[in-house]
Every structure is written in C-alpha cells, then in structure tokens.
Length: 355
Image (cartoon, rainbow, N blue to C red):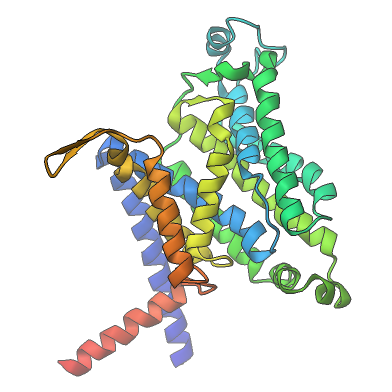
C-alpha cells in the first residue's frame, strides 16, 4: 500500500513539475523582454547541440569535430524549404535559385523534421566509412568534412546563394520550439543511454576490443550514435537559422564546433545533466560577456574593445575546470525527477522534525 502511495505521489510530483515548465514557457514567451527571450532560445539550442555531441564524444567515445557541418546542412535545408518564393527571388539576385527549390514552400515544422533527416543521412554517409578510424584520425576526418561542407556551400551559388548567404529569414523560432526540441533531445538520448544500446555505446567507449569480444557490433552502434547526433544537430541548426534570421557558410565554421566542445567538456563527458547546465551557463555568458569586446573605461583607463575576448575568457574557464574538475562539473553523474522528488521529501521531513 505504501509503495502504491509513493508511486502515486511521485507521479503527481512529475506532472506538477511538467506543468510548471509549460507554465514558465508560456509566461516567458508572452511577458519577458525580447532580449531575455533570445538568450533563453539560445540556451535551448545549445542544450540540443551539447547533448547530441555528448552522445558521440562522451557516451560512445568517438572524437568528432563535424557538428558545425551538420548544423549547416540543417539550417540551409530548412531555410530553403520554408522560405517563400518571393523571398528567394530577393535573395538570389545574382544567380537564380534552381527549380524546384524556387517554388517550394512548406510549413516550418515539416522543414525542421526534413532538416534533421537530411543531416542524419549525411551523418550516415560520413560516419559509415570514417568511424573505422579512431582518436585523432577521426577528429581530423570529421573536421575536414565540416570544412568541405562550408566550402561547398560557399560555391553552390544556385542552391545556397554562395558566400552571400540567406537574409531576412522568417522568425519562426520561439521558446516553444527551442525548449520543446531541447526536452525531446534530452528525453531521447537519456532513454537511448539507459537501455541496451546505451550499455553497448558505453562499452565501446571503455574498450572496443572487449566490447567486440562480448558480441557488440561496433560499426552499427558507432554509426547509430553518429546519425542520432547529426539529426539533432541539424534541428538545432534549423532553429538557429530562423532565430538569427540570416545564415551564411561562415556562420558554421570550426568556431561553432569549438563552442559545443567547451560545453561538453565543462559539463562532463558522459553526463546529460552536466551538459544541460554548462550549455545554459555558456549561452548566458556569451551574451553577458559581450561587454568585454566593447570599449570600456576601467579605473580611469580607456580600454579598447578586443574582438574574440569572450572566447579567451571561456578558454581560461575551460582550463580551470580541467585542472580542478577532471571529469567536468558533473562527471558522469545525473540528476533525475526521482532524485529531486526524494530530495524534496527528505528536506520536508527534516523541517517537520526540526519544528
């Protein structure tokens, strides 16, 4: 009877927590300042990127540097599908866009799914031959893939509009999309990790030879993590493109992948909770620290703005975390609804006993 009551209480707590999240998103989207909403949207996008890369680098142990390439594919595919023919005509004023892209326009939700599937498809084509490599060799190949995508997009004038990029994109991205996609990403990766596939991925990370000896199909599971990570990276790229309302090939340079790697390492390789926390902190600091790149007056001294100062600060923070937290902020630990529920119940009992 007690077990049934505890289970019912836990289920009620979970429903209340979910309703609380939905209420917060509803209030934030309607009442918060546009600048704050933008930061919250970036938090959701960085969570998607961090968790998806952690699946590849943290849980499977494959050192990939190609996430920016998958983002670029997702951003361009979705934009070319949801842009109106009139907007495409305005953007492609030098070289006309090819048919049928010139006349296609579909709803944002479908373009988002297709963008993820396109990135996943390319992830399979890249991962199938490349994941036979390990360590630094895999990192070099995936980095090369990301740069090839960027160069291709710079030269495919009739498809991507080349280095000019796409301007004036419709702003469909809001907190419902970003937070919803982030929650789905966390939920999907968490469930994937907690079943037999996750155990297989972790065994590959620890020792590939032992995992293969135990019957784990190395190729299948590596490609699986790569494809899933690429899918969510494509969705994040599509959301980012619609949020900033402009994309070009240089938006998805190695600098973007470097940012995601910082999130994963600081949060902890193999920790979804740590990645969510570090992604949120990173997105907020990226906006807060814009001031260090602008001219300022400090202690009577005029300090000129130094471009790239934010990343220098993040690099210093990364070094501090590595020195004092060898496994990141969370290591491999995870927080869950059950942990939070039991923590609140315990604190409630302590308060009652104290009074």
